[in-house]
Image (cartoon, rainbow over all chains, first blue to last red; front, side):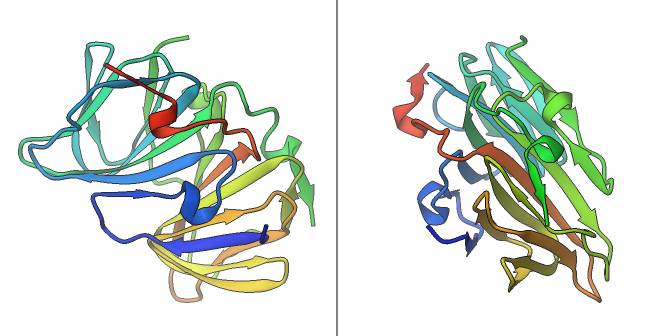
Length: 117
Length: 117
C-alpha cells in the first residue's frame, strides 16, 4: 500500500472515507444535516467506539435518552452500547465528523508509538 | 465508564483528546500552526496509522521526501512507517486534526457493526 493517500472532501450530505483513503484502523464520515433535520433512526454499535466532532452549526444528540446540546468545537466519545441519534437545530444546520474505531484497540500513542526522524 | 463524554475544544496550539474524552480506540489531536511555522521534527509510527483533516488555512506535508500541498477540506491517510512533517504556508496558518489508530485494528464498521434502535 502507498505510504499516503489524500482526497479533497466536498460539502456533501455524507462522505465516507474508509474506502476512499484505504483506512485500516477507522471509518470516518463527514456529515451535514440541514436545519430541522435529524438522522431518522437510533443506533448503537457491537464493537466500535464513536468520536464525534462538531465542525459547524448546532444541534443536539440524544444518547440513552439524555439530550445533549451541541455546537461547533464540541467533541464527544460515545460508548459502543449507547443508543444515539443526532439532529440539527430548528434554525441551524450542523456539520460533524464521526470517527468509528474498535473499542480498546489502541495500544500506545504519540511519544510511546513514535519513531523520530 | 459513562456512555458518553463531551468537551468543548478551544482554539489552542494543540489539544489532545485521549485522556479528556477517555478514548480507548484512538488518540485525536487538534493542532494550529501560525503562518510560516512547521512542526520542528519528522516522525513515523511503530503501530499507528494517522488520519489528518485540514480544517482551515493551508500548508504542506512532507511524507517520505514528497511534498504534498494541503488546504481546507483535504483528508490524508499516512501509513505507520512513513516519515512525515507538517507546516503552515508562509502567508497562512493551518488548523488540522490528527487521528491515531492502530493499523489493521478495525474489524467491521457502519451497517456491519450497527445495532438498530
